[in-house]
Length: 532
Ligand code: F6P
Image: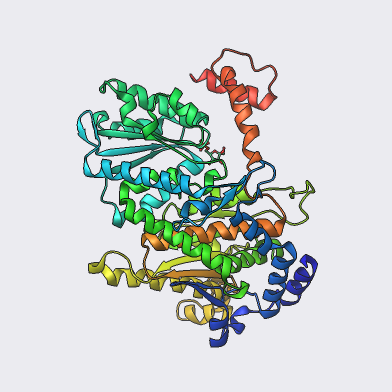
């Protein structure tokens, strides 16, 4: 099917897809999940290509793998684990069996404990030495940071709990800045780490502990832990009633639906957090039941596959016209690139097509004044994903929101339409003449024919955020199944970690750099000569 698709692409690659976009296509190349709408009419995918792409999903056995994932089968083969982040949002508690036992009672029990603790903090029942908690610091990295950090920002209109800070980088600049802004006697530190061994997180946690110990007599009482390694949290001095555990079948980058979401729950409250879970659950139901042509995750996946593996576009820009989604691109970088940045399929064979794309982006309209130049006129095509809400949360400034929406729609229109040489020429004909006119017009040409999709929704509520994140998770799943890879391991992060551990004594001058390559050894020497 890959070859058929590539052949089909070759036959349609040169056409202007704007010629396809009539009212029928606008209806046909759209799908809804609840109130969330995906428009993929502004792409060069036609009905024939779409059928071939659906065939690719069927040939890869996406439906069977999807059912296996939801049922708790160990589809993360290289780590021998189930993939069950969906259980964390299975609020109705329908049984999900892993190794013969229903996981739901423990999941829902932990959710209740989180809710009790979050509400105790939010209402001032749980206090620090100096009184009610004013600040929560989440210390974690990767999936133990990006999800809650993204979501707390995304749901800032609902934030009525303590201030939330996120420390992730081992660079001391990160934690120092946050600690400067907090009072240790009214701060709760959440150490978020699935493994409770990640060097950045444990280093920052120890720094926070020492900072708090200067002013607080019972430091352990102002710490909480979120982890699968509950024994290690006890060694760190955190009492079990503030340890919120989860199982290894929750991948780090898929973990914000459970205990790793505690900071989000502190910010917006248990009810709003549960609305977020409900949104994710609604997308799960949709993903399980909708036919491919109505199925948002499947459609987003086939558009991604078309652009990346078939057209050869190496990157994908995520462009939220929703400022509160400013951390979404960073969150998606981990979700997509750590999941699908693999070169070997499940059976150990090298991939014969490219792995997942480079994902990047910034909110609109800021990006328009920074990098859209390249998206419009650069020599490489960058497929774009626009996200936009019908309404913001600033009712008194709705006209400003309308301007935002107009900009979003204008960008996808401009990318598709472009501007011809003749149009550009007539635009500047009053200013220039002769050779100068042609030369000047050339710079003002937009090639157009550049694809995009738009995800539109009524308003960025907790429920909608849940829908959106689950949509992206399932899209990654579908793309991974089609590529035949394991989207749930991350061996590619290991080598750098090992070498960093080996390099630390070299950097500290406790060990020579003799076994290092010339470049690394001379960089160490340079940094040492400047005081590292
Ligand atoms: O190094 C990558 C990684 O393992 C991610 O997959 C994970 O989200 C992150 O580190 C943090 O891991 P942990 O939650 O165990 O500290």
